[in-house]
Length: 533
Image (cartoon, rainbow, N blue to C red; front, side, top):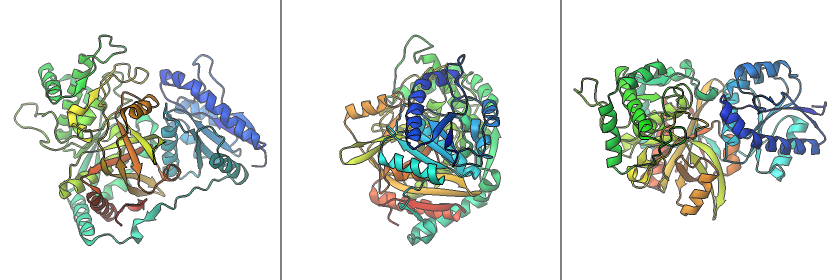
């Protein structure tokens, strides 16, 4: 790094509307990062220009990224600045052959959000076996950032505190947890499970795809399904079936905030189409014997149908609108969730399947979901994370269930055809969090505990306005894992959560889940405190 020049790139969304909306914030962050690097005596060279016609400076496709990397010196240090969501595959090909040090760097903000984009890139680089360093900051003047940047500029790497992580192989799990985990893992390998995947690779999330040679030994096999089939099947659902589904939801107290303008408001027609998608997804899952399914969500169907998130939340709830076979002779998947993994995140899907097995056997409510590890801020004596996702949250995670849920239109910048969200505030309680990821060509998993806390409504509203107010929110405090430890370690934009009845129940569930992961051949790590192991 003696050349004293650092190349800076900005990876972005596929959608022009999103890139234009996020570009002003990206410009501000790049200016602050450039100032910080120059203060250390280095020059910053932007690796690609701002496009005057597109009115943004993001790399917005894999094709564009290939052109950019053809012009970048692979021996020159590279920093990727994140202030918005991005599609990792736009630049992953270039990063796999870049020989100089790589730094991923995000602004500590929940707005677009760069933090989520950076964590996705970190997970993707980890899976690809590309060495990288990572940093984050609110204003790029704090000591943690400046010291980390100085270390990267002079040595090519940054060291973070990960003392909260313990390999599960060195821990003594309760005998009953080991027995349960072994039993459930053996049953899965013997009986097999089918993961229905409606087109892989959603939103450039390379880290969300589990290679078959790693997945199949766990007893789980993919059924690769086409979103065109889901669209067609949705068109075959009758208006009466869609109306019955919506009536079922509203009868349980869920509120829909309807308006009259299709381009900007949520309309009843959009929601009825979502109900058709829900019905179609269950029928296709039954056709192929799927034990869980994943829909692409933001891509794929966005030009044909409203957003899939209402369907996703319903699928993950035990109590949900009944769906019958096409001839009406039988109810499909009655009295149980059909686990759904948002954005076709197969790592979250495998995790959801394991959670469903363990929680059901323990007699706990089996509802589970992934969230974006979106952002966080201190509140009172705690550091309170904002876990937030549009789709997969089951109403049972809210106080009052469906009565605690509402639905608002998805932002037009992402969803031209609209669609209602599953919005609510996650109820206080004890949760087990986890993440499966791929590293060193192996499946690995991190597991820990957290508590969901209640904050005043005005604080919730503040956090919603700083993130995405149409989406559900979980206020989470991780036990024994600080903000910076979580960021340093977590290998994904997503975090899986499931409620336990109380603290002791959470410890019991965590131990059984760790045992099942290990019996499935997944190298597991226990993170933080209050774990019971």
